[in-house]
Image: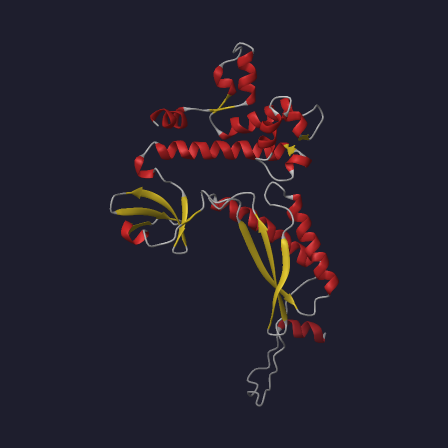
Length: 293
């Protein structure tokens, strides 16, 4: 166990280049094939792509990996990305993002093992509040809330509460709800769904394909409630990244609504004026004077 912890804390990620260089007699300095920061992770991903993909190709395919790995190992490797990679290949961007995420996770694990007080630094959801485990004691656990406030819970209380663990969760779903006017033509609604789906599927590094877009309800006889359900290619451990991706999608949806002239209007309100106050001034709004000239 001590050896494992030492490897995680002190070790560095090795790349395929490192193995290739090792077979050539370690001609280059060891630091040149180790990943110690995110920039080196991106450089390593680029070198891997160039060395593995066919010249001029924009993706790495299963056949390319089988030049370096057994068939079962190549299949396991390509399935680390998404279900479509086995047939459509791995893009340069997808490979870069994957290598950077692996580096981040390993770095986070190494840092957490350096201090027993932060040995479980994983994002949790408890009592509808996202918090990070800051310190674990025999009788109490200290959490760090999103605004950096420390909250202490007795372990006897935590033992009776369900705690959702973001860190160990698979790719998670996000929901976006909005309303449109009930008189919106069906053709516009259909085109809106197509454009939202197209945006999501073109952002394959952020989202899984085929989002669910459907009518949820009709409210007050004048608005139709529509929901978009879609899956991130990540869990919500990195909450900031989750909201960035979601924000970009919402901005694109607003652009689509404007392009298609899709809007929501309030119901008309009847007003009966029985008495008007006596006019106490002969001044008129400035735009009225412009209209009378």
